[in-house]
Image (cartoon, rainbow, N blue to C red; front, side):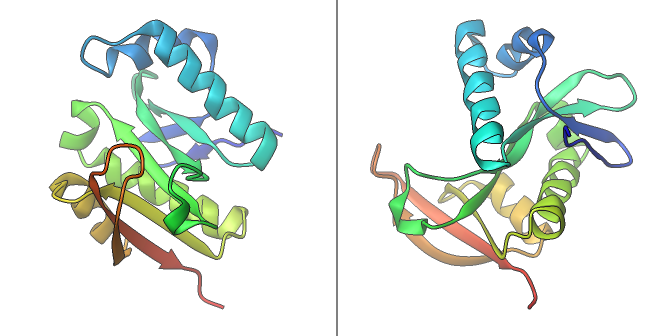
Length: 163
C-alpha cells in the first residue's frame, strides 16, 4: 500500500515521472538528471526501509511545492542509528509556513505510523530557517558535529516518542 499524508493545505505522496522537471526547478540551475537520480534514491529507500522522502504537493493547485520525509543519515555516523527528518520547499512553501506543516506531518507519520522512537534533524549551524521549523515542531538541540563530507558545522535536534 502506498502511503499518502494529507494536511489542510498539502498532500505528501510518492514520486511520479512528471515530478522530475518541477523538482529540478526548485534548485537554481536545476538539473533534471540530478532530480531523476534523487527521486530514484528516495524511492529505493522507500522500498528497502519503509521510509523515504515524499513529494509535497499543494492541495489547492496540485503543483509540486517541494520534498519532505525521512531518511537514514548514513553519511553522518555520529548520529546513527537514527531516522532523520528532512524537507526542502520552494519559496512559496517557506513564505506560507508550509515547511512546518509538511515537517509536522512527516514527524507524526514517523512516531505514530512507523513507530520510530527517536527522530533527529540535522542542519547547518546558522541556518535560522531550519532552526525555526525544528523549534516549532518541539524538537530540541542535542549536539553539534562536523559534516564528514565537507567539515561544515552541523546542529543535531532530536525528538523522542513518549514511552
